Image 1 (tube, rainbow, N blue to C red):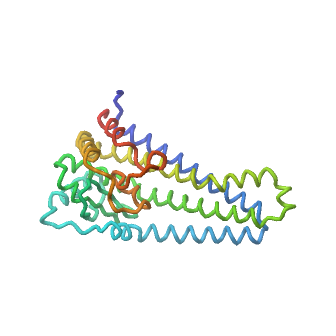
Image 2 (image 1 turned 180 degrees about the vertical axis):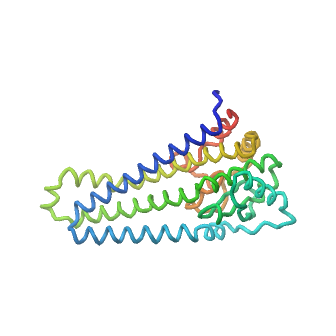
Image 3 (image 1 turned 135 degrees about the vertical axis):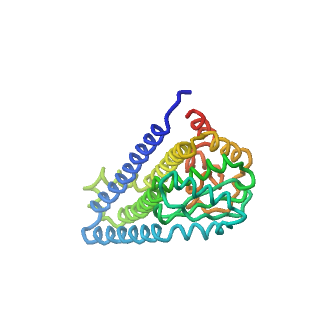
Length: 294
């Protein structure tokens, strides 16, 4: 397999993530235009303002309180300075290497190997690692996992994914509004609008599905980017590759975690039959292969 540099891998995944986000924004714009076309001006303004208010409130809440909600939802507890001294030292050391303030360190009681990062920016960030990871990973493997999460913080992935989640939520809201607007539109107006209404109707049905697929694709791209950044920080891609191999062998995807926050973890904590379509993480085998090609 052709060798690729850390920087090439990071640049490629960031570029693809931005392009996919632009697609979601275009989808939102198409829905807004169709609703404005179909509804009477008074209704259009009201619904669009309502959608904007909901989006702003959701974004504000997610941005400022999302990390606290996630930590509480996962049962994360502050790391013990004595029992988890190596974990804390690893987080501090890799944070210095990444040029960010050390995030708060938490531990989640669970036998599976996993970890996640949350927070609105590097100054307000947290990292949580499962007890299964602390028990089963050696030092270089743990460094690779921590490096992955530090990279998410340093690259502002958490903020980026919050924005995408808000846009995807807005697509769902607008799709519902578009379907409602089709019902209240008078028969004569439907005849005039013909083709546009038909296109809008299809858009309302399929836009939420497409936006969820795009969200999953963006999340997968960010995982590849964080893997590459971790390899750059630790200067040892094999550490993370070996950790992912253990995750592949040990994990059963049975963590009690909401699907709404599963994309934050280094590996999907919940496995389901729909993972092939809506998975927020690339296949572990592929990630391992890419890391070992570096």
